[in-house]
Amino acid sequence: MPILEKSFLKDRYLAVYLVDEIHDNYRLDQYTQIYLSNFSRQQLKKKIADGEIKITGRDHKLRPSTKVRYKEKISIEIPKTFQEDEFWKGEQIELIETPEIVHEDKDLLVISKPPFMSTHPTGRHLFNCATVFFESSLGHTCHSIHRLDRETSGILLLGKNPKIASSMTPQFEKGEVKKCYFFIAKTENPPDEDSFVVNERLGAAGTGLKRVYINHYPEDSLEGKRAKTTFKILHREKGYVLGLAFPHTGRQHQIRVHAMIKNLPLLGDKLYLGDYETFQRFKDNRASEEDHSFMEMPRHALHSMAINLKHHSSRRTFMTDIPQDLNTWMGDNLSVNLEDLKKTLSDNLVNWE
Image (cartoon, rainbow, N blue to C red; front, side, top):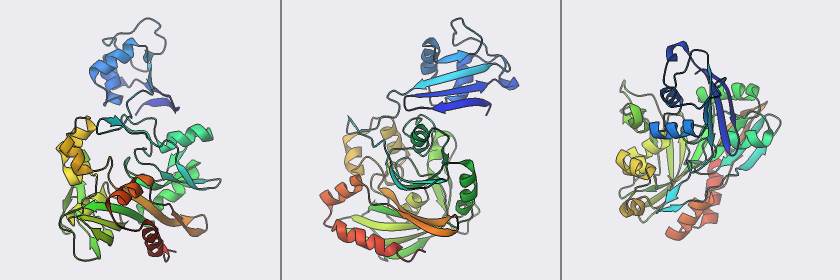
């Protein structure tokens, strides 16, 4: 991507692009849509009219039909408005925008990422991001070492410099990192066993927008990629299951799809408790009352409890507590003792190192 500069602030995103030879003579709105694919043509026309899209050296008023030239610099500014708002039952959700710091040293930040915060900027989610938050507070670039889905909360590692990020990333790629997730599943037919392993291969189901849905294939299939997750069930009650998931690989949506395979779709999971159409209705803010009643909570109930990996000269375990939204739901709907549950979670992680 011919990007020359980008900066993320709490209220503004600015990027400067250099026009490639293959894009010479493109209309300005066509060119900018290459990099702002989530924006409609009408939205781009308004941004051009408002002066938020500029061509360096051209001081006159630009039009959507203005032709861009090879090696020109195009600047795109996106102010923070409503693009990252989240809604539940027609009301805006109050987002947690300040992550808890679990550990910090000269090289590494370990945080407990809140739900609905992206790991790094992508698509329309440019501001409520872990890297953006800490780049603003640290005053320099912050590097994501791995990632969590936007709705997934919990332990996330960020590098304060590129050296620590490049040195730690291979541990994730080689499967040397131990990870533990807490989940709440909604099911009428949970598995009988308390501990089991799922090995189905995983791969994107289609092209375009439908790539968001991940398909599963038999372990001996040639389709998809190898994946493995160990599950441990902690509590069953009234059609709900509390459990832990230990992913041995790091495929997209791995825990969510592997849980669904075992009749344990996650509470609030619009894709795998619901389906692609349900996901789209929530995305477009047109979910029905029945959709909300079935999902029961605004996000999928998955939380990264702990991670164990090598940091400098020794292995370290970083842990966080179950977040307030999951605690509140359990307190309102289940009879499980939350303090006992917390102890059980700690007991399951005591022998990690």
